[in-house]
Amino acid sequence: MTGVNTSAADLGIMAGFPPPADKRITLENWDSPPFNRWSFQNIRSILPTRAIARGSAPSIALPRAIQDLDSVAFTNIDGSASTVAAMLDSTYTDGFILLHRGRVVMERYMNGMSEASLHLSQSVVKSFVGTLVGILVGRGVLDLDRPVSAYVPELAACGYAAALLGQVVDMRSGVRFVEDYLDPNAEVSLLDRAAGWKPAIPGATPPGIYDFILALKQERPHGGHFAYRSIETDVLGWVLERVSGMSLTELLSRELWQPLGCEFEGCMAIDRAGTCQADGGLNAALRDFARFGQMSLDEGTLNGREIVPAEWVGQCRRGDRAAFVPLYGERFAAFPNACYSRQWWVLDGKTGRHAAMGVFGQMIFIDPPSQIVAVKLSSWPDFLNDATRLTTIRAIEAMARELSA
Image 1 (cartoon, rainbow, N blue to C red):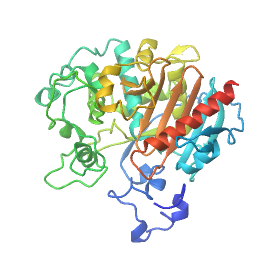
Image 2: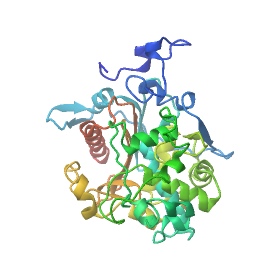
Image 3: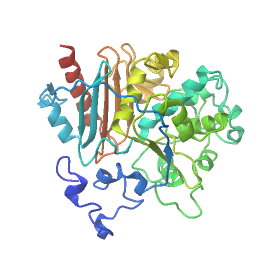
Image 4: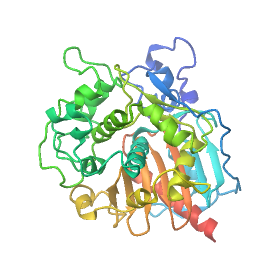
């Protein structure tokens, strides 16, 4: 992909119907550049989805105190000077919102995105699923010390048979699942086919996500070091649906969308069997992602009402550093107190800074000391780009300093 922040409109994607073959979006290319600049805001035109109802009550407004922060300066990771505006322009931004002490101080839409646009969040949804687990743990419906097969007996026949719920929540099971996005034979690529995100291979692709889970094997003892694996969240989705008797979209609506007073309905991508893709299928509006982030910053409450147990929120801000270092210590060298806990990336276990993060540049960033919540929705040309993400975080830190001053 050439150029900086090239938009779908610039490239003429979906400009006519049918579009020319070289601009036609298919299951093979929809999440690749330049097509993802359009598709991440139009998942309902590409994949089957199920709605997350916002309910009939009026939405709860986010207080506003808009400030001009475009010119706030910061030092980039290469030592060069940059600004917030330059960061937004150079990092394939679709939407960005910043809350300080519960008030919206910056809100920006780019690349054709609007207030009502639903944007794919990729793995940001993992933190939503983890939050649902926390709610049910708080009610005594789930127990982190019980095996997941106690809730979904079918799991007793696969690698998850003896894995405890808490081990799966923290991605510390011993099940083999390689999360290499560029390897077409890695388990994460096979999951994409089972989920319907990529074309199925006749005779080889399981009919759905749950069938795929049942084919996975254990390769090491459960409870060892942390290894990021998307399939763990799909196991949690299965557990949540089984114990609640509800679909994941119904559970999200009842426990989060309606209590948070979300402004727009969301939706989840579903596989051919109608199963929600719990590890990456959530689509929502920018402000509604921000509402979730603000609730997490406020220790699980909204206007004095508990939505998520404060104890669970606290666990999302700290974790086992020793379990994190073996595979991720070097990659997260810029965050010496980083770990992973309860489906959140903990960037600083001492201050409680944590984030929900997804490939192609999706992020909800929460910093308790500065009372900052930032949401960035993007359509990067790369699955992963740690330098670009760090640039974004440095810009947010600079805005936090400016607001605190």
